[in-house]
Every structure is written in structure tokens, then in C-alpha cells.
Length: 202
Image (cartoon, rainbow, N blue to C red; front, side):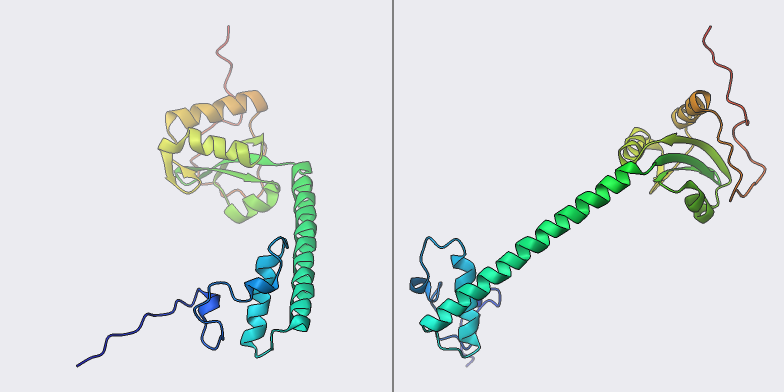
């Protein structure tokens, strides 16, 4: 007759790991670290690791665990500070660079994207036609993606519905038609004339 299995000890619980003399105690050595110590939890974890490594938990071990834990925490805080400073510097550098939102034709779809390097991006994409280019970064790109979401074909590619075509014509009227020929793959199917349409305003 099969015997019932004992309760399985979850591997996520470091205080009930095999080999610990404190199996069944939820917080081993809790009486050895002052309750008001801001690093108490981390020190108790370090003590538990000492115990698993076969180190006797005496006053010297507690002292070493506290010093080691505070050293690790200090290093982590310093790394976080350096990372935050580096990230802020990268963001400032990116903000200082010119960003462009572009509208290009690839076959019968229009791609709306953003780049800081138009030449490099178009060399990679090899569009059939550069329809419009305006200044703007990720927020402007996302705004356009949301605005024309009903026309989305997939990813950053959109069907050339009337609303999107009118938007591109308005950009060309305001900013001029892009004078861009590098990396273009003509297919004889240009959708827009080289000159912007005459304004309908009277």
C-alpha cells in the first residue's frame, strides 16, 4: 500500500532548506540582530547562508555577517547611483540630437518611423519613395501610430487611407516635399508630385 507523501518543502523558502539546523523556524537567528537595524533582513539572510556553509553562528560570525551585508548594500547603492547618472547623461545626449519622424512608401504600404540618422535608416530600409519628413522623436512617432491605428497593416506599416494621405500632403505643403534620392528604389509608382499641392486657402 503506497504511503502518503510528506509535505514538499518549497525551494523558494531559504529558511527551510535541507541542511539547515533551523528547519521549521521562519526567521533563524532573529534574536541575534537588533530589530531596529535597517539592514536586519539582509543580515539574517547572510547569517543563514553562513550556517548552510557550515559556519558556527557565534558573535564573531554575526559581526562579519553585518559588515559583509552593509558592504554589499553600499556597493549596490553606489552602482545604482552611477547607473542613474549614466542613464541621465544618455537621455540628455539623445535629447540634444536631432530626431526625425519619416513617412516612406514601401510597395503599397506607408511606414511611419523615427530616427536620428535618416541616411542610415533609409539605406537599411530602401524605400520606394520618401513621402514626408518632420522633426520629432518617439512621442511624435507614437502619436502618429495612434492617430492612424485603424490603418495599421502591422508594426510600423500602414495602409494608405485618405486620412494618412491628407496628413502627408499637409506636411509636404507646410515643410516642402523631401528632396531625398539616396537609397531610394524607384518602382515607377510615385504617389505624390515633387511639388506640394497649391493651398486651397483663398
